[in-house]
Length: 398
Image (cartoon, rainbow, N blue to C red):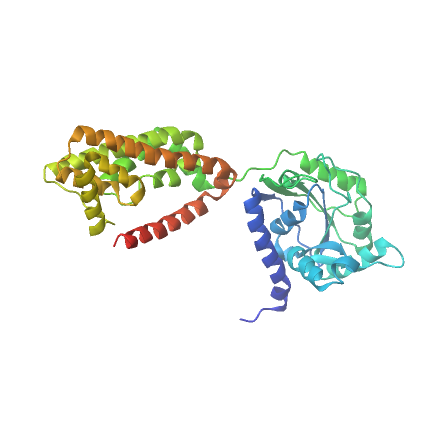
């Protein structure tokens, strides 16, 4: 497929945006408010932003539209004179080479910015010159204002929020929500006017926290009484016939709200224990339920464990991959004594499901900032992972 000339120009910006959108999603999420103003004459614009983190450039590349073709000023004698640094700055950051000029640093910036603006690009500047350590906005240098005047283009003020929390100066990375607030274009503003506008955008409040609609729906379910009914019903159904393991309900649902995992797992254990006993009693009376995703070897193993060790044999189920419904029906067919069998089932179900609940709790607390935003992707990944694992288990027992 051939690309039109304009599409060729935009392709690198699209690729960079996709790359950094993924990075920002993992780093805490990014929201954008406001729109980059279109240029009526096809030329570009100057964009100024506060500067508090190395994550600022990544956020802007992720949040600005590819049609704006953002570029970031970089010293040509360092970044563009060695091939690997040139590839790095152009491939990952859309670097704009600014060469030293005999008439001073601004002359070199003006020459580079003129070519970029005439090509319809957005030239991004950080007028503070260095990263803030306390979130305050320092005095703005005059470069952006001078460029706006000399090139006859607008200046777009932008506030960056949360980037300093993600990657603070002399600090460690930690996930946090980020936001880009794009202000209205300004024509020939003074440095102080630009600083005031950026400060005003920052003052509108903290960065918005982006949450997944899937997470909100699952979270609401888990926090309601229906969540406990779901847990109990899932545990019961899996012990009767349902082929998806009881603990997957913890992974799929309870992970959305770690504080509910103790109650959720309690209901799950109670439902599973009840289902095992119903299945066992039914088998004692000659009634059986469908048992999908089981193999003859699973039934043979359960029968051997229960014959050799009696009701205590169900403890093997905690680790061997044989579904609990297989042990439940086999115990009924072998007419195991119900009272000791019930006790050992409670031990096995409590130990297995309780241990998994502890693991899910720890993982969901750690992953909570990501789960809140990416729950749909999380469900897809865990669903695929479960499918792969269960196929391997069935194959191993075939």
